[in-house]
Length: 347
Ligand SMILES: NC(=O)c1ccc[n+]([C@@H]2O[C@H](COP(=O)([O-])OP(=O)(O)OC[C@H]3O[C@@H](n4cnc5c(N)ncnc54)[C@H](OP(=O)(O)O)[C@@H]3O)[C@@H](O)[C@H]2O)c1
Image (cartoon, rainbow, N blue to C red; front, side, top):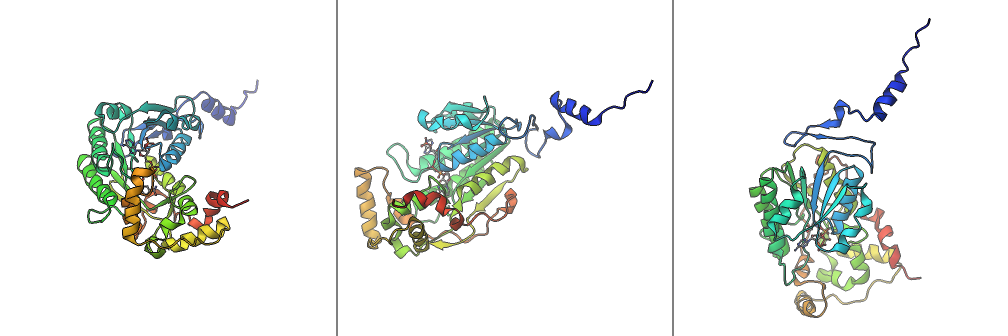
């Protein structure tokens, strides 16, 4: 009798379909709890990580959650407004997206939101102050509260999103509080990764789309302010990559690849929307500030007085840390602007 030879391919297939785990499914990164990944790659996978994204309902947060969920990560979605949280449901497989209501002032709710997580992202931020929340209460007190509770709860990793221009010496209160928030986060959670992106562009941005609607506000300083715009997808990818990179304490700057003036960007917007350049006058800073102050009580959210100050501040000239997050240079704004601006063309 001839013994039949074992079919190796068949055995491998059988092991895979039986759901047995392989050694490489165990991920142990220094300074992080070991996690076990399983399942097929993509939407239905399980990366083994449980991640909380505070500020997930914002512009950057939505792309980050989508990228994390696609990697098979279970994502806790702290939300304030039920409607804002709805969009996340189809981003992950059943049970992968967990919504939890929260208030940035409520410590027990924050603790509940990050209780099971090994990685916590804090993306909360405000472009303008409201009667309930000023910049300090979100960028400083809120950030410190999250960092403290994350440290007490034994979270392995905290990623705090600040701004490229964060500086205690800045004339803008927004940038000052971002800098103070960074210091408080570092004191509470010494191994935290601070991420400083440049101005983001994308579908729901406050740059290209705002320029197409309100060019007058971008002519301040004769359009000579220089910024380093960065694609929201690139920053979201960089943040998502951090889940598989060992601890990276310190500050990472993520500016765009080019330094551009508002004048250049307004020209880019006009060339894509096929509109004649705006003939709106260049407002003096004092007039713009007074109008912004008055607008706060009439129309909300309008351009805030602090945003007027920021329109005169150039982005800092630092090298990008893209290589540290496993990425080459980010994309140029000219390569994507048509996608976001086509809808502003007249019929
Ligand atoms: N957009 C940019 O160009 C840019 C550039 C550099 C850095 N950043 C920073 O990157 C982060 C994300 O930016 P983004 O453009 O995604 O901001 P965004 O669209 O304004 O979203 C801000 C997020 O913070 C939350 N938040 C604000 N105030 C809060 C409060 N009092 N309590 C609880 N949650 C609060 C918002 O929640 P609700 O939806 O409930 O309001 C939202 O999820 C921010 O920290 C921002 O400062 C942004």
